[in-house]
Amino acid sequence: MPANLPPQYYEAERRYREAKEPQDKLKILHEMFAIMPKHKGTDKLQADLKFRISKLKKEIQQKKKASRRDQYFVEKEGAACVVLIGAPNVGKSQILSSLTNATPEVAPYPYTTLKPLCGMMPFENVQIQLVDTPPISSDFMEPWLAGIIRQADLVLLVVDLLSESMLEETETVFKRLEQSKIQLEIEEREVNPLDGIAHKKTMILGNKNESEDSEENLTVLKDLYGQRFPIFSISAKGKKNLEELKKKIFDSLGILRVYTKVPGKKADFEDPVILKIGSTLLDAARAIHKDFAYNLKYARLWGNGVYDGQMVQKDFVLKDGHVVEFHI
Image (cartoon, rainbow, N blue to C red):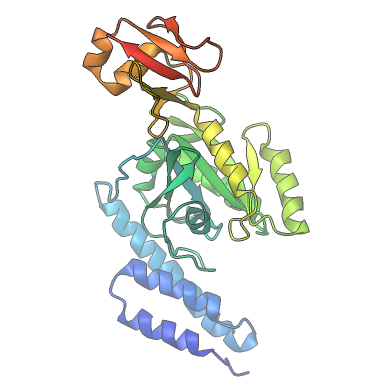
């Protein structure tokens, strides 16, 4: 039976021969496998590609293990840093593209993301940093990925709701991260110096919620993990529930916005001071400048729970939307 390979396959094969870097070769092999028609005429070719993919992934992993230092570091920007993780082909790059102005490569085959890609997600008057990362599978995880997850303010574990191996892929991510001393949990906890385990605040995000099958898988996901994590579903490609997702991300970050004003002038609502929920007036002053905090006497407050211009002391606990007029 003839293979009847399409022209796109031969074009990809040409690029594979010209590729120099192992990561580029691996990406093209996955593309070739996705393009190839699946029938008896391509059985041997399918087996050959799977063998080459497996061999190349092992070679890359061995080279990564030989390296003693991380290859990538993400400089945190905006109000908070949210890291997208997940198994191959769950749609992390599409989520980044749909929520930010970033332009990652989006393709229907896995391993299109080989390094961290960042974009800024606008929510009301703040910008939240989203970081797309390479996939995590049973036989491969970038060694530097653990460091990026550890510094995140929130982890979005993305799950493909159309995948037949959804649960297996999800458990693989948990186990892989546990091997790197990262525990995904509903709340953030400080690293215990005795065991070095990072407990990262996590939301499970079901992607590709586009059919009855995906709704059924979402129900299964909630049954298994609903007691451990908040779970929300979207269709990044279909633009479904994206605005609601932005709100849930902001609420999950546990942050608040405080606006400053000088006496006799209007408040600046364009550039809020970002603080953790539970922060005090003194914390806000420290966020502006340590000397400013040292000289602070009191402040006047406008907003939720206070009357306009109410005088408050350094230990006053702030709420989202408060307007502060500092007095030194």
